[in-house]
Length: 100
Image (cartoon, rainbow, N blue to C red):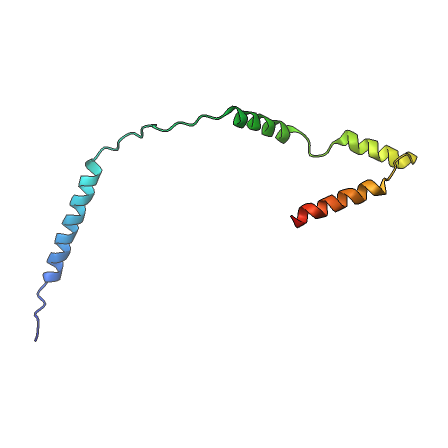
């Protein structure tokens, strides 16, 4: 069986390009619809309070310089007291929290 190639492929390519162009033109003629705002969001009183607290905390310094200075002075003059029982209690509490 044999087929004769006589340029039929070019004709198909031309038909294809016409079909693509008509689709693009049809899509380009359509006007986009404006987006309607149908949904709304309202924050509860708690959410508003949490936002206010978050703003306050983000504005606050990460280190309390007054506390650091007080501890530094207490260490320098020897008045800083170490409470081993309190340290042990907090360490055990932390260990219990970590274990679940």
